[in-house]
Image (cartoon, rainbow, N blue to C red; front, side, top):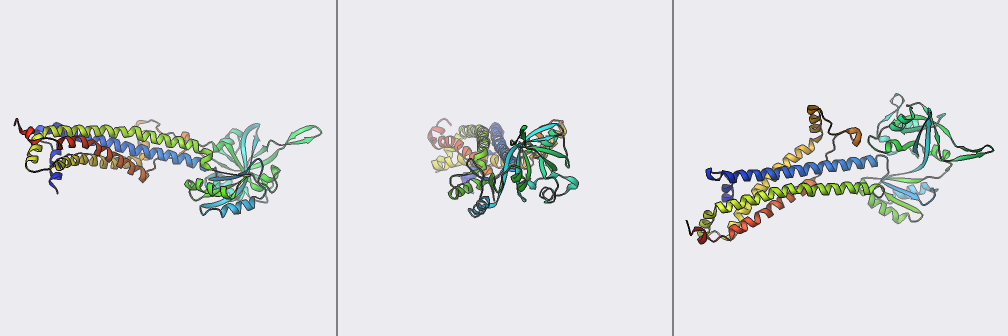
Length: 417
């Protein structure tokens, strides 16, 4: 161990006449600890909320959407095959039919988007209420059904006052001209499944039928409203959309989920950045404590500095002593803050539930946010950024006091001693 390290560590120890300086050092460590911990926890929570909202959106929305300007796609089989071969990131591609319609049952009406889909669609990953807990895909795509099946959301079922096995009428914005005037088209469907996408607007907006039934009902034989593309990771959606645009030019239109809902998610990212800056001020305040501590140490140890300079210590060594002292405070505070922050971030949900149970308060309402647990996702990049910022601020706080100590004239310091 170099003598600079030895002197730095010794200056951090409290003596009877230097207890106040030592207390300030511990306050500085505590400030850095709390600042780093707060940053890690807040970034983890914001990341969790961001991912939770993104999962809610992508639960029913495709990663990439191919449509045609002003009309349906006729050669959707060829479009599907071409899309599958366009990029290695493409996992699946499937046509769909989508039309606005009204659902009528028990004298109640609900507006939905009736969507015709094929088997294997990602919406079937979630849980459904079905008759005798049977598989909803088997019920929906059975060819021998006397009445076609339909899947609706729980909020829609509640508004209509229906349950699994009941029937409802689907009324699209299509009319049949008769001698008695225009009569709206209507067709009965049987509810084979009810889903609940908690907290998402998708819960009340979509109803699902088989693709063949939708094409027949909406008078779209051998046509589709578009082709849904699923990729291996939603982060690759923009890249895949860019690659697909090279193959699908006008009249096709290719959009990723980020283009459909990007403005909302960008707001969440901006909020996360804002909180990072605001909470970073806590670390900055702690850095001022570090600078204050070092300035007081320099004033207290001016005789020691003069003796060291007289014994041959260089200005660089003196500066190194106080830089190391500040870095020790910053490193200890950052390490403790990282440990504390990771603990709270990774155990946020049980901690929140414990607080709610003990104090009888409601901190996180699952029905409002549509999430089963308090979201907290720790990304190594966020933790690394927090540690680097904290250590950089701590280092910068040591420069001025160390520079002042290095410039001290030993003769001037010992003149009146």
